[in-house]
Image 1 (tube, rainbow, N blue to C red):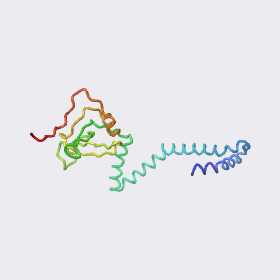
Image 2: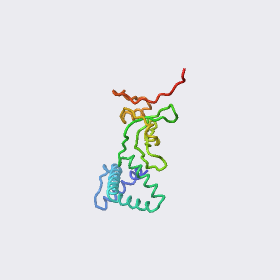
Image 3: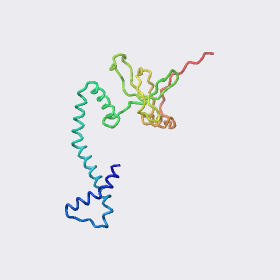
Image 4: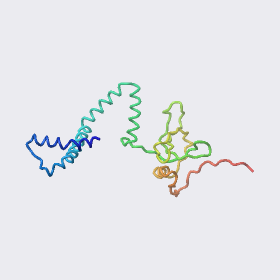
Length: 194
């Protein structure tokens, strides 16, 4: 809508401006004036964006952030959202220590996960020895969920995190290569005795 308005009215504005400078546009170039107006609008938008991003935008965002931090509930929500966006959009690099499996959602079923970090008593109700793992969803691994699992129940895999991500994103179609070393074996289910 904005571009249509610029295209429609820019020719007249440019001609008026040129008349103020005692300049005349030849008739053969008059049909091109709306395109010149679009070009000038694009340059103007770019310049305003650059100035706002470099100086005005930073000051405005800083003022807005200070205002948000004045309110206790809003401050807590804002800080949490800020941490998440910094993590997801590149201000803070996310690294999983390794790919693993856990017995989830019930005994006998195994789910691929990524080891995030040991919890180590940072969540008071949990005793020592728990690990935070991300159970990814396919095909968008970032939309998974974090589960706190006893560390001894996390079964490490001998595949790279990248191969495990490919496996998740491909919905299980791209199986990782077999590693040359021995795999950690999954616990064997006791069968009925004969």
